[in-house]
Length: 109
Image (cartoon, rainbow, N blue to C red; front, side, top):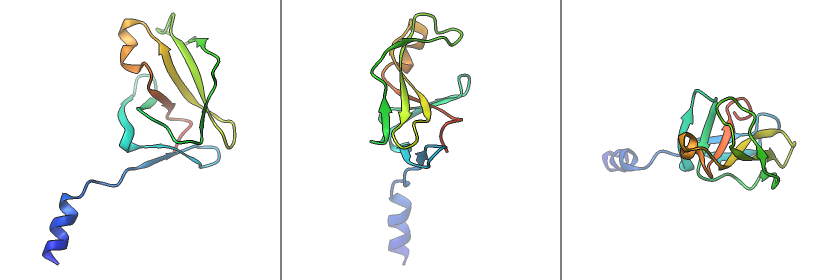
């Protein structure tokens, strides 16, 4: 029993799964966690689940402070809910977001 407890203490924690707030499909988990950006209300992951669709059309971000940033919108393939975006071209102060999956905290559970 003590051996089992030791192994349990050494084991890596199980990842937490993020799900679409609309249809509850998984969209990602904490194993690809980079960080959360409280200022913009998003969590940033290195990868996303297969249920996340990326709109290939790049758009200029209209968010304050993101002048000139090019983004692709993330959608849930189950319910078409907008989940967030991927920053493909950023200004220097937002380079940390480039090519990461930025999920809006209001769109995921």
